[in-house]
Amino acid sequence: MLSERAKNVLLVRMIPFVERNYNLIELGPRGTGKSHLYQQISPYSHLVSGGKATVAKMFVNMGSGERGLVCKYDVVCFDEVSGVSFDQKDGVNIMKGYMESGEFSRGKEPIRADGGIVMVGNFDVDVEHQQRVSHLFGPMPKEMRDDTAFMDRIHGFVPGWDFPKLNKTYFTNHFGLVSDFLAECWTRLRDTSRISTVLPRIDYGGALSGRDTTAVNKTLNGLLKLLQPNPEAPISDELLEWAVKISLEYRRRVKEQQKRIGSAEFRNTHFSYRIGEDGVETFVTTPEIRSENTIGEDPLPPGQIWALNAGGQEEMTGLYKIEVSTGPGSGVRILNKPAPPQFQESVRFAGQNLYSKSKELVGDRDARMSEFSIQLRAFDSSKSGNGMGIAVLMAMCSAMLERNTKGGLVVVGQLNLGGSLDLVYNAVNLAEIAVEKGATTLLIPLNARKQLNDLSDDMITKINIQYYTDIRDCLWKVVME
Image (cartoon, rainbow, N blue to C red; front, side, top):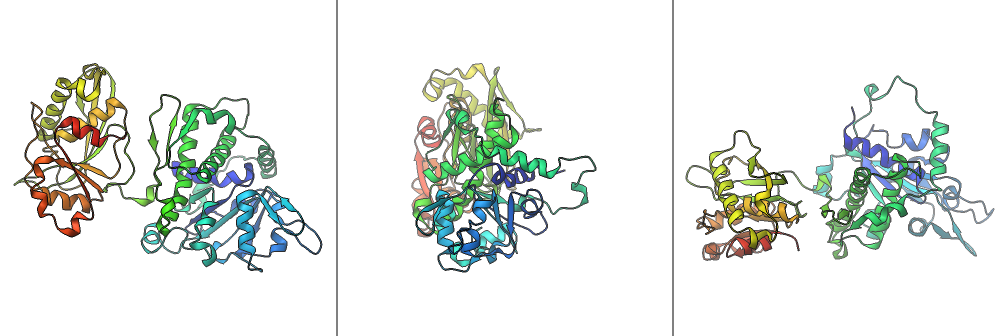
């Protein structure tokens, strides 16, 4: 069976057939059917084998006036992107202009077309290695490889590595749609739009530029038309959220490569969205840019926080992620079975402080009228969850307030039943481990300040150290504004 991410790849491959002027790139392993869809399924698509094209064939023949491929077909696909080239030097610039506006100017007047541009190609290495040595546009020809203006015109980057190599187990023995009928349905859908009916329900975050918003909306419109082609049918919140997440992820992948090339204007890649007036801001990541056991730069959903335990004579310091959800009821439930006794103590201290200081931490919300479900995830040999009271309390407050926690942040600190902060004895070691785990900010009690004077110059430049004096001070440094 195909995974959910593989199914998403298949659906996004189809968007250029149903959305006008949609520009797509897919890079990945060989044998995953990247070019098959554009060559075999629809008479409205054209595959440029080997990637070589002429300006006359692609756009317009100046001699005869005959219109080119982008005017004749819904989709023009370049196979093997590493070989994309034109017979004239300005070919790439003409294509860039066309990808931006859907127009090109050759001769007296501009010519408008609605054919989408698709580029497919192969990675000779795996995606992790590609990101270590270059960026994901590395296989492109040199005129496009580091051109951030060209990248900005790509509406979606399909992660071809999420799709398996095709074999007979993926093919059905049942009847299917005649491909000519399917192609005709697709081309008719190009005349419809679902975007105007759903946009009032979506609020994009501030990191999206104008081009980002255009790209995301085109992907979103295409996915909704494919999944719900009947224009009279309502779009559920579940379907809308699924489509928004894919649209943001596939556009963010483009933005991340622009950021890697070093352009300061692309440094904010924290794409987010809200569905509905009361929706919680949700951040969308691209899975390949970070491993699960390192701290990412993206804000975490409400109730989630990274933490380091203090360690001790019998246990090394380790990285943990605490995940808290709230629901109707009362009390605190630890999902880990069996729950480590030291973590149970941290949860008890956190719960008591939340109940006794509820007003100053969460305002009018009644903590005793909510049930907290808490899960501890350990990423190192340290498994006890010892000395994690502050982090648990911050996660519980974040979940109640429905506020995201800041990205790149790791919290250190234990508290007692009265709300006082325990002394931190190994602050330098904690700061070094925080850097090693990918943190950009270490939030630590003020009582560790003198120890951190001994932190090396090299380390001090790699992490932002913030101090907190009490639990309320810590909370406002943890949650997003």
